[in-house]
Amino acid sequence: MKFTEKQSVSILDPSEIFRPDIASYADKDVKDFRIYTVDENDPIKDRVFQTYKAMHTNQTVDFVQGRHKVWCQFNHFTATIREALEKLNELVDESDPDISLPNIFHAFQTAERARAEYPQYDWLHLTGLIHDLGKVMAFYDEPQWAVVGDTFPVGCEWAKSIVFRNETFEENPDGKNPQYSTKLGIYAEKCGIEQLMMSWGHDEYLYRCLTHNKSTLPKEALQIIRYHSFYPWHTDGDYKHFEIESDENIKNWVNTFNRYDLYTKSEKVPNIDELWPYYQSLIDKYCPGTLEF
Image (cartoon, rainbow, N blue to C red; front, side):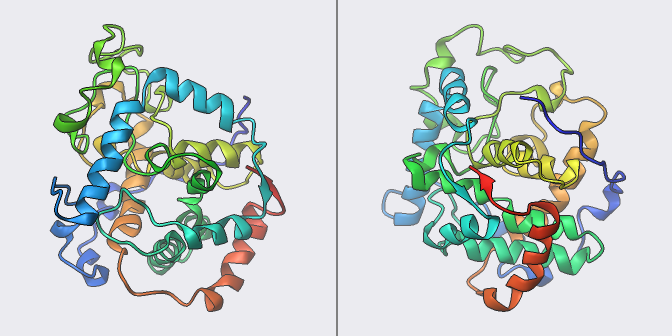
């Protein structure tokens, strides 16, 4: 696939990433987000664990390559961005320990916080709104373990920081393949994060979908979408041996976006009807018309 070159946004000052006001818009202490524990007696914790168990058992090099062949034909359905977003009214993310609301509410929570902090970057507001849109795969027979949750590279050693790393990879056949189970695996040192084959999910799918449909969102927006669930890299510092200099800009933007994606999760429901006109104007600007999914 030939990717369209996107206009690049100037490098973000890293000092802007971790602002002290996160606690002012989080519903709970920031340390209480992303708590992953095994507890069969807690329905939500058990649901999250089982989702990751299935993910880490089945996400292999062969599986990911197969999903690319199926989904990157973009022949499953056509819809406007709004029509696709409204499907998320019916989706609750089974991997998320922090909220059990339909995903469309999280989309607007994320977008509105980005809008409040960076009113001058309308592309960032739209990125917040659509960043999880790839989850529409779940309505077309894709199991949630291949749609939601944190992502990681396949074809190399699994990082220690991956959620439930020690409890869930035992049955993944790639762990017995000497080509895939070393630190570098099928990659070269300092090859660049964009050269890694990521586990299949909504991030990679939406990135490729927007590229296929010739969205005019800037490159940074597409990188945020592609890597916002790659927590072992952007938050925990693993996979640095694959980084090149330009990856620092990607990481800075993803970590900035992560403030809105993670810490805005709450039971406070935004007034979607009031917000639609503004976000429709951004859709018309960057992703107009009917898209192929």
